[in-house]
Length: 150
Image: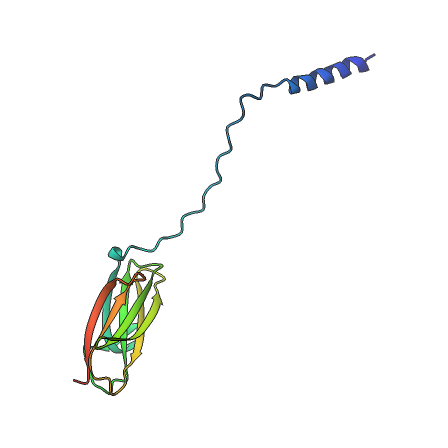
């Protein structure tokens, strides 16, 4: 007979579970946390560029800088120090006269960041040259004019 009251209590307990009011549902779970936003590249207006032309780079510093080089120079280096362009790709676009003769893409991995590119100058490529530092969208951030052999 002791089994009957225990059975009645069990049935009553199950019945009360089935009779729970479910019209008030629990609030929806909170959305999962979003990963931290990746660092966005700086806007071109925030980018600051210092640049010089040189014959060489030693210990990450330009050597023998100038804007006029003899026709025997061999190569010219565009050295730059960039602030505020972390994550961007900048281009050194080289011109002899009005003809584009080179485009070097450089990834800027910090701020400030130093980088450079070299351009071979043929002995017969005398005259006016210039190089532009451009952002990925093509906007010119800096231009340096130079001459070879004059």
